Figure 1: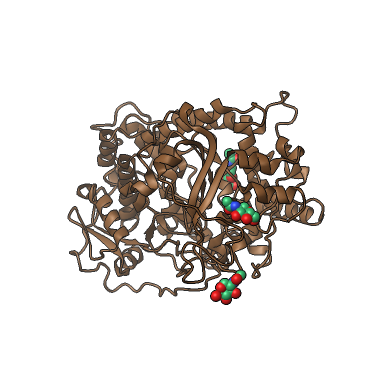
Figure 2: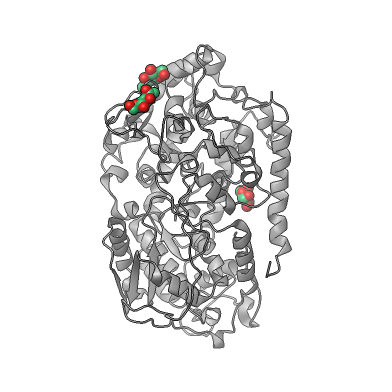
Amino acid sequence: MAFPRRPSAFLRYLIPAALILCVFYVLTGQPGSDFASPQNFRRPWAGLGAQKHPIEYLIDSAEKEFANKISRQSHTIAEAAAAYRQRRGRHPPPGFDKWFKFAQEKNAVIVEDFWDQIYHDLEPFWALEAQRIRKDAWDFEMRIEVRDGKASSGSDWFWTKIWLKMIGTVEGLLPDMDIALNAMDEPRLVVPWEEIDELVGRAGQDKRMVRAEEVVTEFEKLAKPGEGPEKDFETPKKVWEGNKHYWLIARRGCPPTSLARQSPVITDFNRTPLIKSSFALPHMTEGYVSNYTLSTDFCHQSDLQALEGVFVEPLSVSATKTLFPMFGGSKLAVNNEILLPAPMYWNEEERFMGSQGADIPWEEKEDAVIWRGVATGGKNKEDNWRSFQRHRFVAMNNGSKITLAEQRQLEPVNFALPPKAYGLKAQKRGKLGEWVASWSNVQFIDLMCGIKGQGVRCNYTDQHFEVTKGMPMAEQFRNKYLPDIDGNSFSGRYLGFLRSTSLPIKATLWREWHDSRLVAWKHFVPMDSRFGDWYGIMEFFLGVDGTGRDEVARKIAMEGKEWAERVLRKEDMQVYVLRLLLEYARVSDPRRGEMGWVGDLLGGEGAKGRDNELVKDGEGEVGSAAGEA
Ligand SMILES: *[C@@H]1O[C@H](CO)[C@@H](O)[C@H](O)[C@H]1NC(C)=O
Ligand SMILES: *[C@@H]1O[C@H](CO)[C@@H](O)[C@H](O)[C@H]1NC(C)=O
Ligand SMILES: *[C@@H]1O[C@H](CO)[C@@H](O)[C@H](O)[C@H]1NC(C)=O
């Protein structure tokens, strides 16, 4: 490799990966220790005394995490700039003062962590030539151009139009740039992990604080709209892969020692998938998700290759290994797109958002679960549908299927009964199916058949799923519990769920712009992608013999709603987009190393009352943000 590796980064991944591997081999070496093993329940809290439910500990620790986040709020530009330098190790970008003013005018909560995703997404670009970034963006056909404070696009693809509207609301504050957009549902960039690790390593090494007096505070102007920048620059050719087996593409974004890279590739999906909670061990504690971010990362969860439609057969694939600045609305942990708020969030479409009925009082709602949806997830077929997440979840909510499985009359074809270690009361009595049927209303409205001419039905899944009519969001909100299961990509209804007075229960592999603003178990309930914890979660909230914790569910639902109305507003999307695009314009500028906003350090407005020790001697290496591969 042409550039030295950073041993620290290497070790950081090697050690956890080695641990995961050990756990894997221990568990898989013992056939009896499958899904149902109590070994899968780590007990770091054992001995803490009380007979508290594991979820109660998770809720307590979410409270602390949230309080800690909020305590880092900035109220002045000097505080915001100091928090920036501390977390990012660079000066804020030119225009930071205007961004701060904008954020304040929009009454935004300013906590530097809220923009972590931007830095995760852009960091590798600091190691690419700025000219290359500019040229690549301009060369991409689906793009938005910003020149002289005006945003425009030659494309009238409906998503591009929505993004153009969103960016248009901050255009006057933007420098010149070209923004390449992913118009597909599926993310398309998967640069091999080794390459990203090296790029992020190099970006980290170049990180520095230029002396305030030497900082370049203006962005470069670009050629007129329709005229490309960096005409003579040769960018690497991109090869687009159309291999429908996306797992093979996705896993190269994982560390070489990860299970995703090391495990055999599954190609036969015409069978009952293996469902083992051992793969969830690193992100769960006592059977429940304790590290939500990690739970959305599939690198340690190689079994998900046969449990998620996106890995089995997405609707469309067009992927490349070549890093270039493409923006998109959601992505998997390994993808290298730069995230913008998704168009459907900006548009606030009723079918996703359901503003009506969103404020039905909790007390008036049914103690029940509702889910309606289409059998998406990818292209389901007769020989692969058992591996699709929505099919798995719907089947797990069918009381008669569960009863048949409990009575060992018919083994489930696409799910597993929950591990005994959950100690579910209904299961102990052999009445899990009956109990689930008493609160669950989960059905497909369209089986999305792989065979044409079947309407909403489908000859190979008909016997497993009844199809019912769709239900308006306003009516769904009459139920307290709203599971949210990924479709072809992220589920666009999440924001609507959060803003409602019902409780979202979320299982996902997708990352979105807002992830660092939400705290699992504080604002929503996280669920493992195998759904092995589903019944346990519901037993916790609903109880079996009047033992439920309705009040706890209500509290999370309300706090999620309040918080979404505080930090996930359209104004917050604008503030995010403005920060993102200032950073993007800087990293695309050949003078980026010297560029920044240092108004607070040079005296004058905003400079009052903060120690700027960190930067007084010039080139200090600061911050802990290096190396987010
Ligand atoms: C969650 O997992 C990530 C990745 O392994 C790790 O960096 C982070 O510290 C974990 N968070 C907690 C709260 O344990
Ligand atoms: C479904 O219909 C197709 C096309 O008519 C046929 O080839 C296939 O065998 C059928 N599958 C089942 C399970 O009936
Ligand atoms: C539940 O499962 C049974 C058995 O597979 C099936 O006949 C029935 O249609 C399913 N019910 C629903 C609502 O999908």
